[in-house]
Amino acid sequence: MTATTSVQRTRRSTPWYFLLLALASLMWSGQGTAVKILDPHLGPIAITFLPFYCTTLLAIPWLIRLRRNRGARQRLSRADWIRFIIAGVAGQVLAQLGMTWGVSLSLASNGAILNLLIPVISAVLASIMLRERMSLLRVGSLLIGLLGVALMSSGDLHQASFIQSRFLIGNVLILGGCLGSSFYNVYCKGLLQRFEEIEILIYSYITASVASIPLLVWAEPVPWRNFLAFDWQAWAAFAFLALFMYGASMLLFFAALAHLDVTTASISLYLVPVFGVVLAITVLGERLSLMEAIGAVIVLIAMLIIVRYDKV
Image 1 (cartoon, one colour):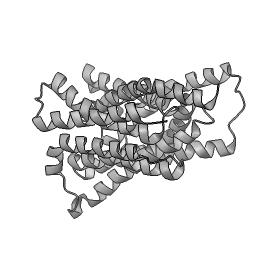
Image 2: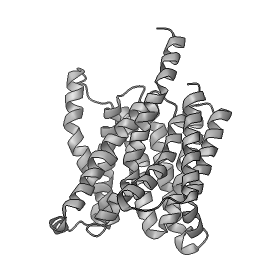
Image 3: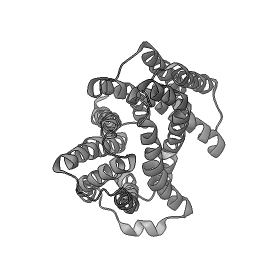
Image 4: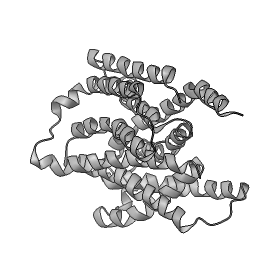
């Protein structure tokens, strides 16, 4: 198969890859609801990492079976482990801890606004680390998508406060979380040339888990009796975070990322607030404002432009 044929096949499959990204975004949009349900029972750091540990433990047998089936019984080299440590610590730990701890020291509206920078930061890092091209189409789609989510987040924009000194540390931590999330996506794209998606996910989760356990023990020891007070909603929220938020959604994202540039795939992150609004309407009975409707349409236009016209 020639390189031209491969590119044409990838372009024909682009809508399928964006469907995977849309499903991942749908799962990510439910994180806020799950965290709110668990908030009366656990602290923010425990809510972040305990489901994360469960995801890692559940996936390790899958990883072992995969490597055996592939005949890949050789141990990872020291250089390989260093790569996964970088992905786990500089990526996952920084992303999860920065956002969780940052919002607790700042405002939720600040976190919502700063999160809009993740696709932009990802695009810049991808151009530097992976030499991805920044075409006018991609830049335009990013800006259109950013405009759409900004309109949807107009309420957060009014409530946000970035200059007050009492929120400075929290805002810096949130920004660090955004950088960690963007770095993880870009860095793992490079690892896809050597490892399968499940390998990258679980090895990076292992290193992130090991690095975060001392922090959890020191900063927020978990009173295990709190689990006895869990109702079915709390258990459902915990299971959602472990199975879908940290598990299935990341596998879907990596499956698409293996065939798309980071810049292109990152635009799909703007679907998260769109799905968040949909969930709020269907689950919580909230009403859709005119500004949210306009913003959602603009985000969808940005997605359609990149799916239809971007050349892989």
